Length: 153
Image 1 (tube, rainbow, N blue to C red):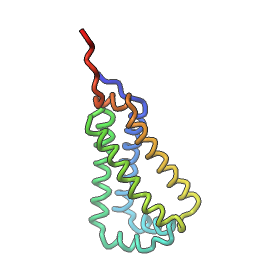
Image 2: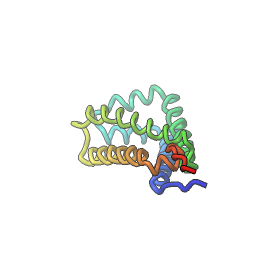
Image 3: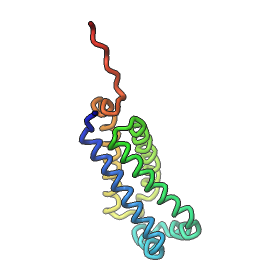
Image 4: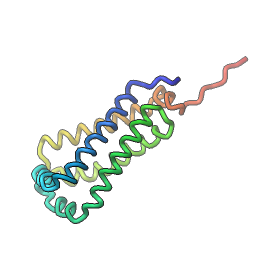
């Protein structure tokens, strides 16, 4: 049985935590939509269009939270079990999220509080750490992505 690297355990737990947050957001969306929209407006006052759009697309928002919950649970479990595909999905998702968040972060930067800027920078740091950690040889080895040379007879 392969031994799971400690960092992979941490990343899997991050995915499980993200699933729990998405479940919480889904429940808030379904049962306390007004409060959730008020919170979004209070956190980023310049994003007043966002809550208005969210109210117009309730099915899409519900589907998004449900899909992200399933995605985070699935990837978290697969990382936990060291499934090879989870390595690829994790790296691709981190790169995609980094690229999308960079554009959004730069655009919203003038409107964000110091706290939100700090949280954003920490998120970027976490994503960089995940990508660097997943690229390490012993991590890739845990997923069976490193070829071992045949020993001479």
